[in-house]
Image (cartoon, rainbow, N blue to C red):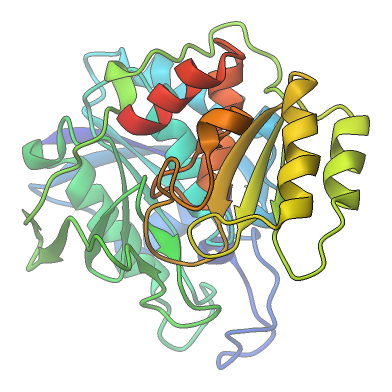
Length: 329
C-alpha cells in the first residue's frame, strides 16, 4: 500500500456546530485530524495514512509564517522514500491561495493534495469525510504524480493555479470556471482529462530554504472615481509590490495610470490584474505596459498574482523578468 501523510491545518472540515443542521454558524478548527481519520475508517488496499496536526486555525487566519512552515515540512516529508504523497486539510476561505503557493515552492513530483469541506464535521451529511477519503485516494495514485499541487473536493480534481472558490456556501464551490477541472474521482479512481501546462513544484526557480518572511505585496480593487489613496498608503506602509484588480482587461483610469506609473518609478512592481472573474489580462491591451513598465497577470486571479509576485520579488525587481515569470507559472 502507498504511504500517505496528512498535514492538518484546521478549517471547516474540522468544524463543530451547535446542532446537526448547522452548516453556516459553527466553530471551525476544533476536531483533531486523528478523529477525522477515524470517521473514514481504514483504507485497505489503498493507503496507510499517518497524520500530523501542523495547525488548528480558521483559514481566514492563515499567514505567511504557517505557509513557510507547511512548505518546509512538505519538502522534508516528500524527500523521504517512505512517503508516497501528502494530503493537506485546510479551510476553504484561503485554500486556493495556499495551494498555489505550495504549487510554486514544493520541490517534488510526488502528489500533494489540498482538501477541505463546506460543512462542519457535525452536520447531518458532512462532505468532509468523503472529500478526505478521495484526497487520500488521489495522493496515493500514480496518475497524480508530476501534476503539481492538486485540490480535491466534491469528487473533482482541480489544478491549484486555476481553481477558485465560486460560491460562499455550496459544496460544489471549487471550480476553474473557464479552464475546467483536471478530472474527477469516480468509484475510488482518479480520472484525468487534461493536464496543467504551466511550470510547477520542482520545475520552478523559487527556493524558500531559510526564508523567514515574504516581501509585502498588497491588492487594490479598481472602481469608479479611484483617487489612488489606498495605493499610495500601501507604498507608504512598505509594500514592495502592488496588484491592481483593474477594470475589464485590467484597465485603469487616466488618473490611476499616472498614480501607479509614479509608484512603479519608485521601484515598486505593479501588476495589472482584473476584478473580472474570467479571462486573461493581455500585455499592451488596455494600455501601453511598455510605457509604464507594468506587469500583467495573464489569467491569474489577483490573490494568486500576489503570491507569484511575492515569490518573484525574492529573486528580482526587474519588471521584464517578473513578466516572464507570469508567462511560465
